[in-house]
Length: 253
Image (tube, rainbow, N blue to C red; front, side):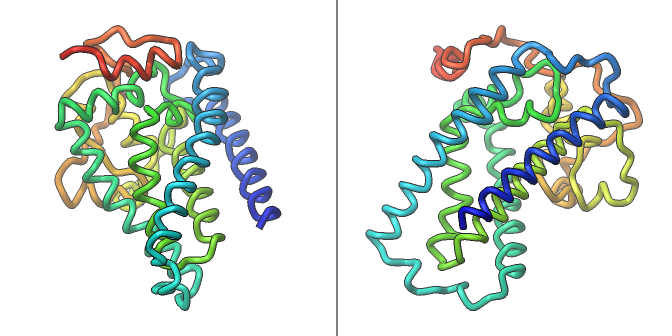
């Protein structure tokens, strides 16, 4: 299992380096700097420190639920082929995250928590890691709890986490890509960068994470020929400090 975790880390680092290179060669937004404001916060505090600490918390909570309930001993999905389990949990969670994402934009309370994710004024391969701890705790608990509680082997969670990491870098990457028909199926920077546009009417579209078909089916897709003029939050002065960014969600309405 340790070797599988190491393999996952190597894959994520390698893919990240590829995206960094492609952003320099085929930029979606030309002139966007690599060392842009907030990149060290996003990389060291959100991507590394926060991910590690919250991972311990989330899996500790799930394991406590399992030890209290014994659900995983039912082994509901254990006999399914690994690839079937992976597809099942990936599609199931993606359907959930589409609707919860829409809810975060529609709810004034949840939007305060989600604001952090929309705060970067330069969207790139690592910008997607900026998410409030509460948002991560909610979504990743709901994501990984079924995997463990339904009796899937540990490698399914590792495979799923690796896919999450790659996809998160991909949809936020500053890469000028045209995927044609596949954009109706697979989500990418073409649509998701519009979701981060600082104009509210555009940011309230393209909620899908991995599968763009949710947006097309539920009529929230937006894919014009032009590109967004700016990113980030237009109506608030979002803090730069990691801890202030978290506390900012609890300011008075």
